[in-house]
Image (cartoon, rainbow, N blue to C red; front, side, top):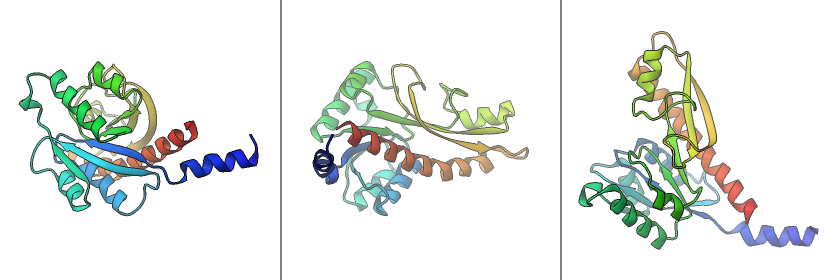
Length: 211
C-alpha cells in the first residue's frame, strides 16, 4: 500500500467514532465511572450514545442525562419473557445506530437472537480472572471464601456460553489475608474503571484497523 493510500484511509477514519450503548440493571457504579471518564475526554474515538437501565434510582442514567446522553428505562418485567424483552432491546439499539454494547453490571443472559444481531459486538465485565469463578453473581465473595491470594477483573466479548468468549483485558487484584468483601470491593471499583477504559480503547483500535 502506498503512502497516499495510507493517508486516504487515515483521513476516512479520522473523524469517525464508535457508537456505544451501555446496559445496566442496578445503580450502575461501573457505568457511571465510565461516563465520568467520557466526560473528561478520555475516549477519543467513541461516542456513548445510549444508556439503557431497568430501575430507579440509577446513578448511570442520572449521569448520562446530565451529559445529554439519551437514556431509556426498559424493564424486563414489562415483557412476557427474556426473548421478547431482548427483541425490544435489539430494535432500540438498531434504531440508534449502535455499533458496540457494554454490559456493566447487567444481570440478564444474552440470547441467540441478540448475539446474531450484534456478532462479537457485545462486551461484559466480570469480577474474576477467567477462567476462575465463572457463572456466579458472587465471584468476589467466592474468591475470599476459597482463600485465593490473587483475584481480578476480566472484560470479554460474550458468546452463547455463560462467562466465556474472547478475553479483551484482565487486571489482577491482590487479596490480603485480612480482606473481606468490604475491604476488597473498593479495589474492584478502582480497577474496574481503568480496565473498562482500556477495553474500549482496544475496541477502538481493532474497529478502525478493520475498516
